[in-house]
Amino acid sequence: MAGERLKLAGFVVCVLMLSMLLGSCNEEAHSTAEKEAVKKMDILVTPFGKTPDGEDVQLYTLTNSSGVKARIMTYGGILVSLDVPDKDGKLGDVVLGYDNLADYVENNPYFGALVGRYGNRIGKGKFTLDGKEYTLAVNNGENHLHGGLKGFDKVVWKGSPVKGGDYVGVKLTYLSKDGEEGYPGNLNCTVVYTLNEDNEFKIDYSATTDAATVLNLTHHSYFNLTECKRDILDHQMMLNADKCTPVDEGLIPTGELRNVSGTVMDFTRATAIGARIDSDYEQIKFGGGYDHNWVLNKSGEGMTLAARVYEPTTGRVMEVLTTEPGIQFYSGNFLDGTITGKDGIVYKYRYGFCLETQHFPDSPNKPEFPSVVLKPGEKYSHTTIYRFSVSD
Image (tube, rainbow, N blue to C red; front, top):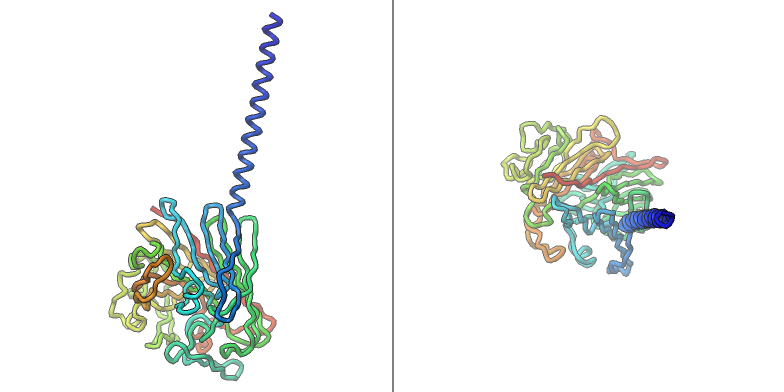
């Protein structure tokens, strides 16, 4: 009997030891899994070539624990690629661009770029501030577009990595000197790109100046949620805007805030981009499609849902949230099949669309529009988020 009790006691001890061992293994496995997840949320910095002037360009690769990946280079603050999942969990690149720096330098229609000092157009390249007229470069017909001949999309920014509990990112800084492209004031700009665990690609802009100036920074990625397998005309888009700023034949706003209801400019309900794009409506004729600013429905200065785009074949959804008062929707009207981009893809007519959060075009010449004037002692700041998800 005593021998049987000893055997039973020994068996119990073995079971307890095995249980403890398995628990320890499970804890170790769980800890390892957590460490692996943290490892996946990472920042990688690699060389991306040199500019013709010999400046080194770096590429920052941001990855979250789901494998979503954003690559940003210091030349032009350009978003080179953005890989997000489709409804089957397959990752794919949803922005247009090039495989190498040389193509961005030689022929870039603002793919993925940071745009400044003034995103969009300023009529006839002139504005008056504090009684003085300033003349800017004219690079879009008779108008000034996206900062001029050498805007922020064509300079090398200084980059540094940033990291938080649930995000990774890159901080970009640039000093735009007084008189650059005709603008007054030494302007210190900071732009922070971050990617978080909720598949949000966030852009925080800030700037200060030592003299009164005008400023309107934005981001100019061309998106195609099919990974450029087809054009963007079947993408379903909603714009949270009851009004737009109609333009003249040079695409300069007239100053009117026009109600979109009952017109081809009405995207208050999700509508295929291509549903009315070839209309004979005068605004469509002027832009060769959509290339207009919408006035967002806002109740304050906080974040507002500006747009939502759904692509039916992939199930991808992109939402745009911003603190800005307007958004420019451009439907890729000037893409014409002459550009070969990443992976040898030819970017055909309307193969990408842009949603540029911003103040309104030509605001320096339209006192009735929200002000774009920045003065010494003030801080310019705004935030935009491109948030990705899927839907059946």
